Length: 173
Image (cartoon, rainbow, N blue to C red):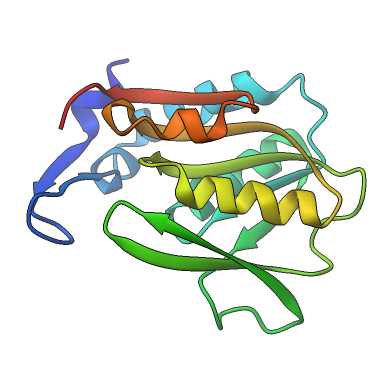
């Protein structure tokens, strides 16, 4: 199945010059959604994952489903102020600003084998910060997966010490 054909491109969102790759058109297509989930699952099924960590908010969608299929727990990484229990945070630079993410302090236990999932890899800042959070809590980042990779932004370079997979690649904007 050609998943790229199910992705909508929205020019100048969230700001002028950005070509936003919208996954909602893939998510509403039952065949595309199922195919994407199966492809992501096949990449991870032999990894003995104990926790799937999804990044707010689009990483929650397939991250939660992957956790169920892998027989693992699911952990959300959220934007600041969204988690109710004690948490730790990590700041990062993204393609159009600066932000930070948080995880509950008790979400990852030492020795947890983690699959990190998000919808899109751009500059790698968000995922690199997520890796630091997991490792600060004693977890091992076993694998990272994305639906989409904007390869021309070279985000994979920031994640070079990890096993990284993406289902759809864009080589130019």
